[in-house]
Length: 353
Image (cartoon, helix red, strand yellow):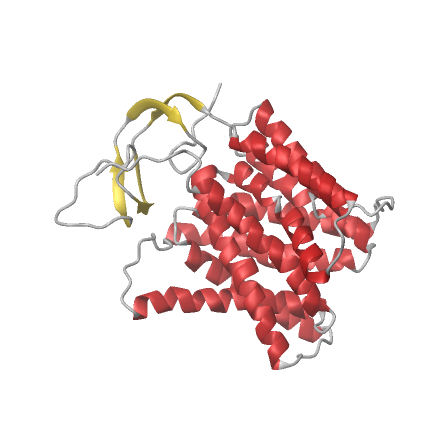
């Protein structure tokens, strides 16, 4: 059976779903930050993500569900170590150092550098394809995020700003290196990242004098972390598998707007001109990306790898005995030349003139 679907599916819904969950975590965390030390809350969020995904990871085996994702291999471990280092440890550490040395307004503005760093590294270092439409779309989304976080004060470039810029660069590197792992089980990867990063942040928070809050607050923070960090990260990684880093990063940049809209609902705030204008800019950027149709004749070289897949035009191999879809196993792609709309996914990381 050959499966055919639009090139927008399932990558775009996954990336947007990741942005929705992460964006929702901001106003929900704001409800908790008054009662929990910020650094401790960061640890609770990440550890909640890691432990929640551990339940999913081991629970599906206990109830006999077949794994449809490829497990991590030894060759993946160095990439995983760098992902945990840059995304789970250095990023949060630099952010905390930055926020302690600069104003909240400057910090909010500078955090938009993460999307720029993610897309810039993907396009300039990893040579993902980009055209004017995508650049305009990404620019509109980032402009909306900047407008949303600007409160009329001038941007302060001080020691704290450098730390926040370093945090954004760390997360940009993290997002691009995570693409190297996008063929493996995203639940397993996000689980490891959450447990390591959460434990590290908790330890540092306690070293610097934080005290453990009430159990109910810890549970609420862990639940927000499971959905807003853990499940969001799993969806982000699946988006990377189908869209590549730059496009997934651009869709994920919608998260601040989603958070702002939810804040209006949760805290009963009136929609401001900034929220409306940012929404218009981001809607334009989203339309430009959704309207992309990268379609040209391209060649696939022989390739062997393992990942979750169905039998489509890129997976036309035989099996000994019955099988279900999706499934994961080591398989070989024979050389193929054809034309169809595509993104820089696992099978379309070719160069362009």
